[in-house]
Structure formats: structure tokens, C-alpha cells
Length: 158
Image (cartoon, rainbow, N blue to C red):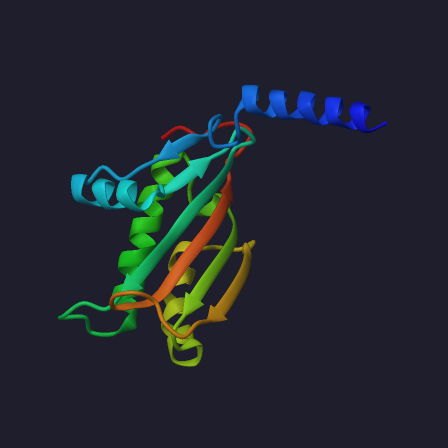
């Protein structure tokens, strides 16, 4: 009996190794900016992955304050613009977003500005959304935004 299980395990392992993983069959979306590309390659992540089933997984985009900002909406607008650009490179748009997860350093004070900006990009019917408060985001980050989109069955013209 042990030999039969081992044989089955070995066959499954060989098949998995031969066929590669989900990322090997995916489209990888990387930044065009050489400095950003170098940073992401050194840390080992991409802007997004589009899997064979047309699901788009975006890495987290950090919204951070900059000198000259008039409020939180400026930081969120930059982050949502970056997300829109990544979605476009992946062949998706805001209407394709099915799930948003946002990580906030101060959920209560950030929610009004975040929601105001999000609602300029995301229309009804709304995607699922989870907002989580965290103690810290590296650098000058105030919020990190991660999302999942599903490409339409018929690709839209870009």
C-alpha cells in the first residue's frame, strides 16, 4: 500500500514540476520606470499577475503624503491613478475590480478621504472591500491598497 501511495505521489509531483506553477502560465506586469523595475526585481515582486483564468492580482500600492499635499485626498488620488495605470497595462479597468483590501494607519481619520477618492474611480455595482487598521506602513505610507480584478470574457478594445 505504501508503495502505491508513493507511486501516486511521485507521478503527481512530476506532473506538477513539468507543467509549472500558475505564475509560469501567467502574464507578469512590471513597471516601465527603470528605478521602480530595479526595486521590484530586487525585492521579488511584480505590479500585477494575470493568471490563465483572466484574474488580475495587483500588488499593494502605497499611498503616502508628500510635501505640498493639501490633504489626504492628494495621496489617495496618486495611489488610485497608479492603480488605474497598472490595471490598464493588465488589460483591465475599474469596472473589472471584484475585491479591494485597504490597510490604514488610522482608519477613522482616513476613511472619509479614502472613500471620496475611491468613489471617483469605483462605481456601482461595488466590489467587495475590506478595510483593515495596521500599526505602520513603511516610509511615509498612510494606506496600502491591494485589489483583484477579473478580465471580461471578451477583451475590450484599449
